[in-house]
Every structure is written in C-alpha cells, then in structure tokens.
Length: 469
Image (cartoon, rainbow, N blue to C red; front, side):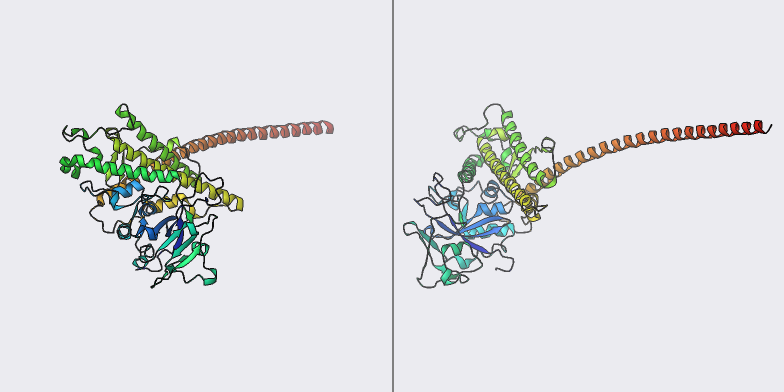
C-alpha cells in the first residue's frame, strides 16, 4: 500500500528520433511511434512503466530497477533468470524491444507482477508503490502519428482544463490518476519540437542491452549440455565446471572464442578490463577526495561474482560464452563510470561558474555508488531463483576489493607520514646544530667584550696613576 515514502510519478514519452536528421533540436518529420510511460526516480535512476495501448499490457523496465539497486544488467539476469535446468528461461519471459526495429528504449521489460516480486526482493516495494499499483492496470495511452495527437483514457485532476496539454502532462508530477469508467477519451496534441519529457537510448546503450541479453541466453542454452553434471553444479561455481569433459555424442558445435591463442590471453583480457574499470573508479573518487595515483590504486581481483555465477580469472579462457558475458558486463561497467565521471565534471563546472565552493553531497558519485551498492535488503525473502549465498558472496567480494583499495591508500599515506617525519627530524637536527653554534659564538663575543673592558680599565688606571705622580 502506498504511503508518504512512495515516489511520485511523471508522464513521459519513449521516442526514437532520427539520428541522421540535420537538426537535433527538432523531431524528425517522419515520426515513428511514441510509447507513453509512467516514470519515477529511484536513487537518481528513472524506472518506467509502459502504458501503451497497442502492447496489450503494462511492462516495467527491470534493467532500470536493477541499476537503481546497484546491479548491472548481467547481474540482474543471473539473479532472476539463472535456472539453467529450465528450457523455458528465454526471452519469452521478458521483452527487449517488442520486435520493433526502432524501439526507443531497449531494456529487460517484464510484467508488473514480475517487477513486484523483484521490488520485494530488493526491499523497495514501498518506494515503488505508485508505479506498481494495480490501480493503474486500466490506464492506457496511445500515439497516433498521422494525426499528431495522443489519446488517453485517464486524466490528471491537478491540471485545469484550460491548460491541459501534452506539455503540461510531461511537466506535472502526480501520485494518482482519474480513470474514465466509460468510453470517454482525452486527446492532446503533440508538438513537433523535442520536449523535455521525450526519452530514448542511443545505439551504445541499446547495443549493451542486446549484447548482454544475447550472451546470457547463449549461456543458458549451453547449460543444457551439462545436465549430466548436475551434482557438480550444486557444489561448484558454474565457471569452474570442466566443460571439455562432454562426451562426443553430446558435444555441441565449437563455440566462438573471442580470446584466441594461449589461455594466458584471456587472463590478460581480464587484467586489462579490471585495470580500466579500477582507473575509472579512481578518477571518479579523485574528483571528490583529492589526487590519487592511478597505477598504485589499481586492484586486480582473482574472482568476480555476478548473481549466481562466479567468474574466475584462470578459467575465463576455457569457454567462449563466458568471455562474451564477461566482456559485455565489463563494457557496461565502464560505460556506467564514464557517465558518472561526465556528470561529476559537469557539476563541478557549473559550481565553479556559479561561484560555489563545493558540490552538494547528494550529487557525490562516491556516495551514490555506496548507497546503490548497499541498497539491497538482505532481510527480504528470496525466491527459488535467488541464492542467498551468492548475494552474500557478491557483497563480500565488493567489500574485499574496497578493503584492499583502502589498505593501499592507507599504506601510501603511512609512507608519506614517515617521509615527512624523517624530514622534520632532519630539520630539527639542523636547527639544534645552528643553536649550538650560535651559543658558542655568543660566549666568545662575551669573553672578548669583557677582555676589552678590562684592558681599557687597566689602561685608564695606569694613565691616572702616572699623572698623579
């Protein structure tokens, strides 16, 4: 049930404008279909609910939900779709682009019931109460490109009739809507200029989604060949199963391997991506906490946990589909931290122009990363597809990397403190030597002054005595 802590909603449009248009400030003349959505912000990440009439149902962007809770798309797929023994664990359970060639926002779109289960696992069902409410099941909107209008079977009572328009809908936040009980509809015109509420993913973001989903589905399909090793799967990570032990009768076709050559090539690829990711994380922290040496701050873990799958540095070169999943996941991680770095630089530029001295704490990428990393509730019940031990192992792996990085930074600080201490001791010794020299010189000065006074006094006394005689 919704309460005061539930996040408000906003009406937006998913729209794919032509990237080859001469001007990017106006929507292309040959408009594709717009997809109306309800959107809410969780941890500065927008989560969408598709309410398009032509899709015959509502769908939630699960990939955005996972991202808001600190997970990558690959981690979310393994967390909720890692049942390799089920042959039905395919794209039938979710949609990527609804078979549309120019779908504006590719993601893992799931039903509202499935999204409610995920939100319950993460402990955010209260914050998403409005977005996942059953009261919105009868709400629909549809786009008619030929008539340049949107048709709605609902209305926002907070907008007066005289100002009711598509632009007003896109600019208004709300927590409930009025659904017409009869066949009444409201029509709002769509402007040909791009509005702030129009959202789309670029080819990079859409490509990352397709790449990771395809890699995961390929891995699930490959899992059918290891059914004879079910007992081994229960005790060992999937990445450590000896795949070459297949019999020739059930051996699949040779899968493509991205890291050709010796097994050490895959290890080098592992180290390269881990180093690049660590450098980006270090740059994000350097902006807010001060200068950090990139090379000395790099961390190269031996294992990496993604949902219920454990990637091992030494076993990455054995299976091609593991390499595809690893590369796609690491590419998303790099893209995520590049985005954080760009936002932070833009914020610092705006702050310097406005004359402020510091960036608000709420926009600190380090704080956002820590909040997202520990946002998952460990007390919420998990379904059969979620392994508590894998979640715990994932967080422990992250904690181990953090502790190692902190230990490296503290060791460097201790070395700096020791160097400064030696420098201070040397300066103190120099000052002490100067003090002794100065003391000796002052004593000599006093002796010669006293000797001169006595000599003059003796001379005056002798002169006075000779005068009287």
